[in-house]
Image 1 (cartoon, helix red, strand yellow):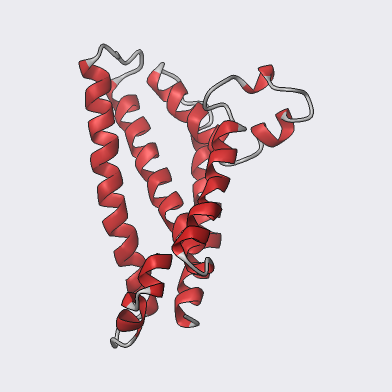
Image 2: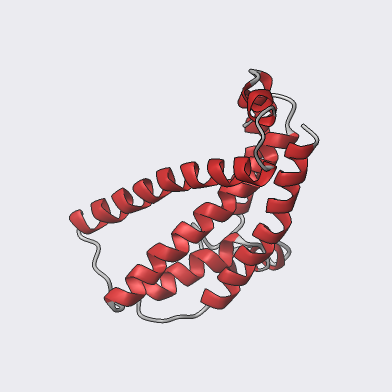
Length: 170
């Protein structure tokens, strides 16, 4: 996004008689289709290499759907970062925030094994509920799904208007 802006692509889009939300929606749909292929390929390779669902097929599909939803949400979040960054290098630096959130979540280790001062942050940030919800669905439970979806709604409700407004002022 930042590179599109610095190379003039964004200016060309903004000169067209289309709503700014269409630009955000188009970019989100394009990136989300790539995310869908990657998530599908990852799942296929997981099954190929021996992963088996402990839950039902419906719960497995729900887990995949939740990954797709988070993909859309974080596409918009990263879109905002790209629009706020002055250039592509700065946008890459801003994206490192996502790695911090991933490492300080239940993605790699249980939150209970983290230092006590870090556990509240790890428990109450958007990555942990998504990871926990996907894991629970894959083993046959449904815990944390509503919390993960709630985080999705909140992040999208905050990020999408910022992206659209940022395009209006680009």
